[in-house]
Image (cartoon, rainbow over all chains, first blue to last red; front, side):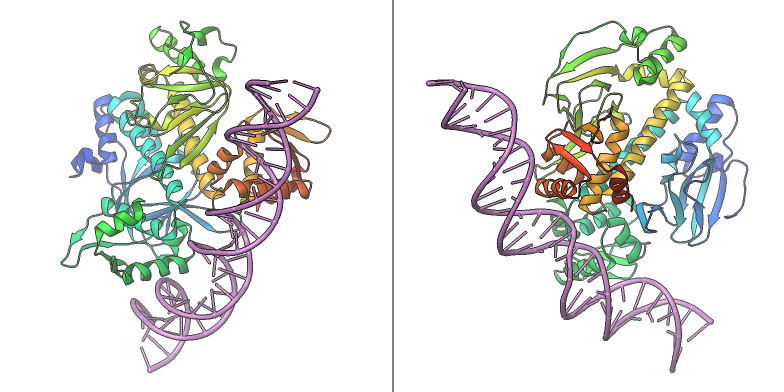
Length: 237
Length: 237
DNA sequence: CGCGGATTTGACATAGTTCAATTCGAGTGG
DNA sequence: CCACTCGAATTGAACTATGTCAAATCCGCG
């Protein structure tokens, strides 16, 4: 399922350290029971599955590079995308309670992840307050994120797109060009549409409309936000 | 905020015992550190707030009787209802990670709850595997529930209503009458509409349409499901 | 250079909203 | 016991944002 190179406990000398969920896990285990976490670095080629709905859940994944989408396929075979994961994000949290993954996780681009065995996670939960807090934080953040999605899906198409773009600004490194803030959208229009619950045609039209009003300029995966204020106003109301 | 009668640790001799989240908490504390949980029984009059968005979060609430709605008020002042809580449900889970409630919790009818101080919850998390598992389960169930909401909001109005009714069947005691399964809807049409993200008029129309096709009969808060199979078929697709 | 998939554009159909009017139902007071 | 009232629920008619279907265009790649 994944081409991977296995190290012992890569967190120990990972520069991300405690800013990464894996680092916190590793710290917790080292302090709590002297054992490092059994973290495995993996590489996933574009479009490969990292896990599938229904698979028994044996690990969480921290995304180190690339991007993934998490989704379920509805009874009519439609992909319902619940979220995109970018570097730093933790995938699989919704499966912790159950023993099965509740959703599919698939690489949108070539993706690098760290695999954290669930057994380590459970041990760390028992022995470390810090880790417990970190995990609870991330889970309730996820709940908030879903609340946010529900909110956005109750708005107009333009507002959904605008809000999405603004959210991206906080999630990925953005470069300031002379034209404005430039960001990269790793997902296809189709996936974006499925995420926002719009027809691809609608997403497309919204982009052209926003370009027409010179709020932004876009060209495939690249998107330059020209008038951040106007975009915020649009998304906000 | 709440008219309440305070007991010492009502869980200890509560008949619900370990089927209730409070019971599990209490057990965990008794075993883990010999102290019972500081559970307080409360009564909330109809329409009173149990907590508000932004309040600092000091407790979870288990609903013992009645019904509540959890919601956020959007920038335009619209109530966005994320869920209804019925007896047995735990409210406030999304606030565990943060220290502030992220949503409002308001009694739809006169409501009885048990207040579980967050400090006890945190202690129990540290000392009991059982409690930790129970909490993680409930949190990931909540995530699944939100996934379900997102899914339903991508369906037609009829499907949303049908799915909602079917979901209610599993959540509250239902009586079998000669006409069919009878259930009680504690929420107003307005609240139901806000929950399903439909106009009240649409909800109303759907109910009449479903009655016309004799899938159900409804009269205010009462609703009799006449043709369960047809309703499932409708919701399922 | 040409193929195939992704994106964009156009024309039309429709589910659901909105606004307005009517009915219903539970309290309330005479 | 019977008007009244006021909010909730229902019904009707017209409107609109977005979906659907089809065609045109773009783009990367062999």
